Length: 138
Image (cartoon, rainbow, N blue to C red; front, side, top):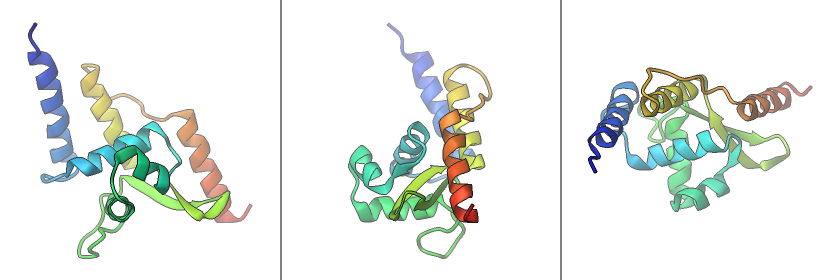
């Protein structure tokens, strides 16, 4: 059995991440992005369990995946948005930004042998709508 095609597909996924995000993109960030993509609105505590990373590590990764890098020396990747949970402001929830959904569409497209798929799930739209509503106070 030859795994050449599978290996090439994985190589193409890595190339997209290096090209579209960062040449030195850490695997822990990939794990966090995949967890957020799989469960839009996932809490930070759930991410800790899902990724087997420490809470401080997940928080740093979420910050860097957001608008501002955790070192504050450069901009973040703007792939994941983390906000207060509208149902409990003590919790933070995360979901993919437009850029993150486009990136996920590219990655899934590679797996399906195409260039891009639409990664706009109804669950993601519902979470975005609830957060917009909570932010506007409506």
